[in-house]
Amino acid sequence: TPETKPLVAGNWKMNGLRSSLDTLKTIASGAAALVGKTDMLICPPATLLREATSLCSRTALRIGAQDCHSLPSGAHTGEISAAMVADCGATFVIVGHSERRDFQSETDAIVRSKAAAAHAARLVAIVCIGETGAERQSGETLNVLKRQLAHSVPDGATATNTVIAYEPVWAIGTGLTPTTDDIREAHAFMRADLVSRFPGNGTNMRILYGGSVKASNAAELMAIVNVDGALVGGASLKADDFLAIAGIY
Ligand code: PEP
Image 1: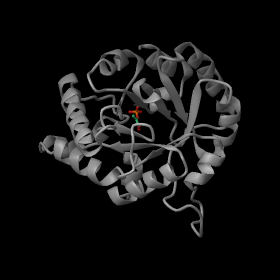
Image 2 (image 1 turned 120 degrees about the horizontal axis):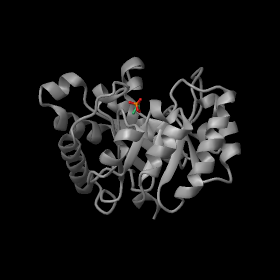
Image 3 (image 1 turned 90 degrees about the vertical axis):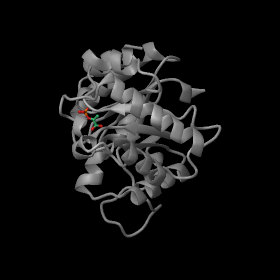
């Protein structure tokens, strides 16, 4: 089943003009070599979604959005619904990225409703969780992960419609990563939590690691038990870097 393959996902954030579609083409070409081995996904800005899905329609590269609204339609100027994302041909959507939790004040409850909206639109929701530096310092990491899993992941989550992305906030864009032992501990903890809440699905629900993943550390990070792939920010903007990260498997 697809969910037992690793997933290497790129989040372009607020980067990318139509001129960046060449990068997407290069990544899509490279993705062919990893068919059957590794699933690959790029989440470009919403403005590029439709062109991205057209470009990648006959390739192994999947396309996702970086966010969606929790409601299907209505008076919400500037927002994009999960149905609109699906209508573009995208198949994934990131919800609850730490930048949105921070700058847009998204709570666990909002993230959960967005993930449920994604499911209703038949999108795979990538639900992001992770502790801040202060929470790590005070030994709260596992409590934070438990709370975020409980309140950000909707009851309808399955191994097929949901991917968890563990992204320590202090590791995003900083060049810092937790130790291998810390990542192993966090992922084992999340796995146990998912298995107990979602019997039959928790075992295969993919748990990605995100935070300063690059070509030079990807192999080591991806080899950790219960790390089922990566969510990559900065290093997904260059085709060579992103393909090197994915090709490690
Ligand atoms: C991210 O923001 O999802 C991320 C992992 O960023 P970076 O790879 O740049 O640390």
